[in-house]
Length: 176
Length: 238
Ligand code: SF4
Ligand code: SF4
Ligand code: SF4
Ligand code: FES
Image 1 (cartoon, helix red, strand yellow):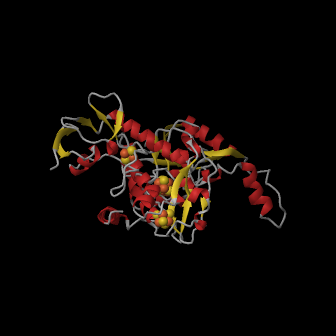
Image 2 (cartoon, rainbow over the protein chains, first blue to last red; image 1 turned 180 degrees about the vertical axis):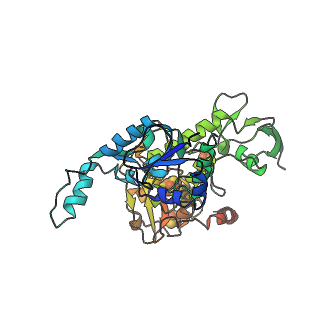
Image 3 (cartoon, rainbow over the protein chains, first blue to last red; image 1 turned 90 degrees about the vertical axis):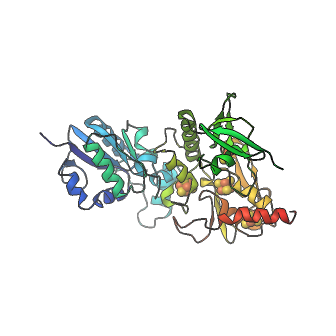
């Protein structure tokens, strides 16, 4: 029998939630003896694969690329986890929302710059008008708030999901 | 002599003196009703509506902090409907302004966070409003960040009832409602503020804080002195 397929993706976040995942220490071996890690910043696969059982999404949806990616991830994933405050509430990336994209980019690339001022337009993806939580764009099955969620909470949630239980996220909290 | 009334809360027989509120009696008996605007030592105002309970014979929800007990009252403090409403209220408090816990002085010392955790609120279905909201850092010792204010009005009541300064009040309406100092002038220019810091101590969130506190370092450790101060103020006839 093949093992459940787990993926992680990194949208607009600081990678702290992924660091907390790694912070499970040797329990990560336990989890990935019961599951395959098929995609994510921690492994070297280029394409998000089909038929993913569980995907942890770190970060808010802030750019056109994030939007494209999360829609594809949703299509290919059975259980989508909104992983950490940026994914759940838009958190720090959402701090720009009251400011607006125009004034934000002006401030960063024109007003405070002495060398080659100019707003980047090629290669980098366009910012969306506001940075949004994942569940405002696609359906989310499990929410795990926290900045970042603790390694213990992540372990309990993955342990539950792999055992086919409804994940217990008690003790999770915005911030922390 | 005070009269003692008997009543039932969540099916339990309990008793309290005639001037007690449903919230008082519930707490005395270890029945936990969530609250945000209530604070022992200052007058209740019924601002947050989190303490709503059902009273048999009434089809309205009633704030426990504002309702005096009555002989034979039947109170439901916990039900699926009440949990749903309490979650909705908490969610609205979060999305109305800009709560970014990760960078907040009150992170992990915040009663709004506590409430969300207790109620099992893991996300918001409502979109955030993301309003542009001011910060007033003109006071020498303290700041107010209106992004995090939930309009519980504890600051207004403590400044008026305990300190006797009445620096704080409210202005505007609806989503534009703000607490304000001395008729809307910057806090640092207030002539009534004594810089006692009581408002900062009672604020349940990171809206009012001491300057120089880093993220997550804004615990309000001196709050338990309040009920005691209230007793002293009453004894002195203030
Ligand atoms: S006041 Fe409380 S809920 Fe709001 S940002 Fe600060 S810690 Fe979070
Ligand atoms: S510091 Fe004291 S006097 Fe000044 S506003 Fe706060 S409670 Fe009122
Ligand atoms: S500043 Fe703090 S104490 Fe005052 S109304 Fe806002 S949340 Fe309540
Ligand atoms: S505690 Fe009763 S309304 Fe706020």
